[in-house]
Length: 313
Image (cartoon, rainbow, N blue to C red):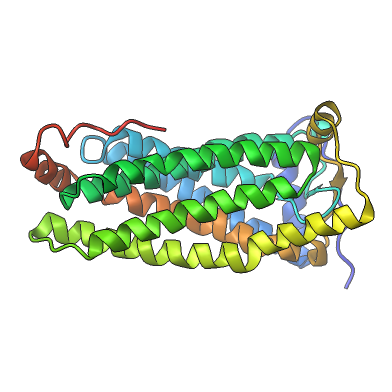
């Protein structure tokens, strides 16, 4: 079956034109637009609910955690609305917006940078909090340091995107995998320690969940993501690909290079983007919800020094 060809959007009323275009393609049953519409609707709900959660939980949950959740959830919505197909060369966008800035590599990377640093800092600080609840001495400090490899991963990602050298993405994904492998190890070490009390039981439940989720994520990175980028880099080296300079790479990233809506091209990105944008905000909200006022009261009762709000990354 033929798919609808991309249509240029007029500079005026970009949002309404985008909605009209999506509706027309949904009527034509183009799987790409069905996937995009469903994902954008889900992430829009996540963004709205995160803002509502932040407003209703002010005082009950630390403001820094609520801020991280809102940033990550809103960023997931923006990235799904102006989605980028990263698996192809050149990278593709779904809509031909004015000047092709929305849907460009640079726009998506800027939003992703904010989201990923926020998520990495949130998990690091929440894990450190729950390790504090269990009264462990040095594990909380190590957990909070886990925010910084994610910052370094952003540097590697930017370098890889600008140069188009996939080896940088191998390093980037290795940093993500290594960070969450450490989260898994810290959680498992904490679960081996005896702990009593309601607050300690809640913290152990969080650590068990984060250990399980992190282990699954690390397996995916080792089995799928890192080998994929490494194979792409080896293929580029074999073909003698010349990598871009900083000026050329940034120029390429400033606007979408290719507009496409074929499902065959988008299907590879659809899975990971659905998980990232659709499930990620739920995990962020869940992590923040574990920082309830009763849990913080229990921590303050143990030691005033330990109850200080953690520094953000």
